[in-house]
Amino acid sequence: MQGKIYRIAGPVAVAIGIAAEMFELVRVGKENLMGEVIKIDGKFTTIQVYEDTSGLRPGEPVTTTGKPLTVDLGPGMLKNIYDGIQRPLEYLQKQMGDYILRGVDAPGIDEKKKWDFKPTVKKGQKVTAGQVIGEVKETETIIHRIMVPPGTKESTIKDIKSGKYTVSDVIGKLEDGTELRMKQVWPVKFARPSKKKLAPDIPLITGQRIFDALFPISKGGVAAIPGPFGAGKTVSQQQLAKWCDAEIIVYVGCGERGNEMTEVLTEFPHLTDPKSGKPLMERTVLIANTSNMPVAAREASIYTGVTIAEYFRDMGYSVAMMADSTSRWAEAMREISSRLEEMPGEEGYPAYLSTRLAQFYERAGRVVPLDESMKEGSVTVIGAVSPPGGDFSEPVTQNTLRVTKVFWALDAKLAQRRHFPSINWLSSYSLYSSPLEPWYNKNVGENWVKMIKRIKSILQEEDKLMEIVQLVGSDALPEKEQITLEVGRMLREYFLQQNAFHDVDTYSEPKKTLMMGETILHYADKAYDALSNGKKLVKILDIKTRDKIGEVKFEKDYNTLLKSIQKELDKEFSRI
Image (tube, rainbow, N blue to C red):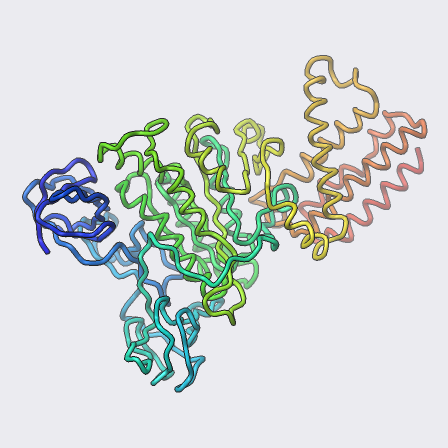
C-alpha cells in the first residue's frame, strides 16, 4: 500500500494514506529510505527513519512492506562488519566508496556464496522447531549449525541432501510442504524462544584479575561498565572481547565516536584468537554505528546485535555481547521521543526508558535451547554506560543498575594515576559472587573464596587508613596498620593493576590470579606474625623478595616463580 508524507521533523516522518501495523517496516520518499512505524493515530502514521532525511518533503511516497524490521541469520555472518540495520559495510564500500548513500539495500548475508552443507538428520526422521538438521563449516574455528526455524510445526523429513548451496537454496522439505533453507529471518524487537533458563552458576572467565576475582560475571549474566570520558570503557570492553571464554563475540559500537570505532575496526581483524591461534574475527560479528550516523539506526543496532547473539546461543554456543554504549542508545530514544512530542521523564528521557533497558538486558541468559541435544547456550551482555560528567546518579546508569547484577564502576581518578583497569574496587559489586563460589572452589582452588574475602577486607581497611594518613601521615599509625597499608599497596599495584598491552600480563588465568593473591597474603601473614613476635617494623618492610611478586605478572612460568618466591619469603623472615 502506498501513501504520502504529511509532515517531517528530523528522523521522524508522519504519513497519511497507509494502513500499517506497529513496528512495520516502510519505505519513505523517492529514494526508498528505510523506516519503522512507531505510532498510529487515526489516519496519521508516525515513522522513524533509519537514514538521513535531509531533502525529504511532504507529498513524497511512503510504501508499506508488510513485515517488521528483520535480520538475516545464517552462514556468512561471522567475520562481517555491519551497520545498525545489518547492511555489510564491506559490500557497501564496494558499491559506493567510503560514504554510504541513502536508500541503499544490501543483503545481511552473501546470497551468492555457496556453502558445503552436511545434514545431521535423515529422510523419515521427525523434526521440530529449533532442531539442528545440518552443519556448515563457516570458519576454521566455528561450525554453523543449521536449524529448523522457530514456529515450525513438528513434521517428518521428506527430503534432505548434502551438497553446495547458497543460503536461499532449498536444502530439504518436510512432509507438510515446508521448505528448509540455511537462512532464517527474525524480527529484531522480539526475543528468540528457548526451552528454559538455567541458573547463573558458571563464570565467564575474562582473564582480567579484578573481574574474575573481585567482581565475577556468570555466563548468561549482565554487567554494566559506567564511567566518564577517558576512564577506559572501550579498552575494558575490547579486553573482555579478546580474552573472555565465550565462543562467539558480538561487538556493537552504538553511537561511539568515529575514531574509537575505527580503532576497533582496524585492530580486530589483526587480533589472534588465544584459543585457536587463528584470527579472532573468525568468531566475531562487529556492528558499527558511529555518533554521526542517524539516531534511529543507533536504536536498531542494539536489537540487531542481541538477535544475532541469540541465534548463535540457539546453536549451543556461549556468546558475549559488548554494547558500547547504551547511553548513546538512550539518547537516540530521547531525541525520537521529543520529536513525537511525548511527555518527557527525568532529564528529558522518555518515561519508558527503564522498560526498554529491562527488555534489552532480559534477553541475556544461560538457557536450554529448543534443540535439547545442544544442552545449553548463553548470551552474556556487557553494556558500557557513559554518564555525562561521570555522574552515576543520572537516569540511564540508575535504570541500568536495576536490571544488571554486576557493576564495574570506572574511576577517572584511577585512570589519571595510570591504574588500569581503572575499576573502583570500593564502589563496584557483583551479585553473582555467591552462586559462582562452588565453581571456583572446585575448578580453581579450594582457597579461592577465602582469599577473595581477605583481599576485599584488606582493601577496605586500607581505604579507611588512607583517610587518617592524609591528616597525620603514615608514621603516626600503629605498626600493624602500617603493614596493612603496605599489603594494600601490593594488592593494588601487583594484583589489581594489569597491562592490556603486555603480551603476558594482558591475560591472567584464574590459577595465576589465585597464586598471586595467595603469595601476597602469605607475605601479610608472615609480616603480622613477625610483628607479634617482637620483630622491628623497619626490617619487616625492608624484605626485598616481596617486590618480585609484581614481576611475576609479566612471566609465563608463574607457577615455579611464585613457589620459589614463597620459599624466599620464608627464608628472609626466618633471618629477621
